Length: 135
Image: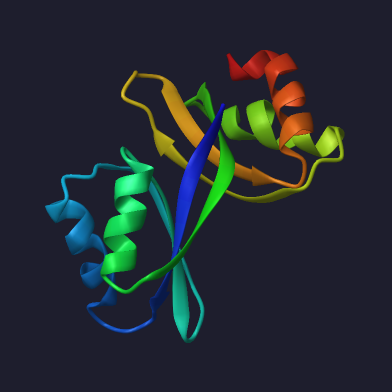
């Protein structure tokens, strides 16, 4: 399933993440998935939220630079090898580059969800729809 992800550029300094998350919290926006990657000078906070448009407006009003990207969301088995068998191996066999991903446990026991950014979303959707382990 295709969804919208917000990537926020945050200075790599103490308290800056609080400054980014506080307005989202005050606006009543639920963060459903989150990943933080850093470098020496800045971090990239990638997140899926309950209301993308409201979060974008809120973050821009707070002075943050951000980008909205279309990514894929899949539910996979939450067991050893689940990610590899359901997502990573099928995409590799199809020659689709997995640019980045982050996973989180779903509310249903035994299931997890993975947010993926790939080189070819349409091809990835076809491959993952055919993957027997992804159901």
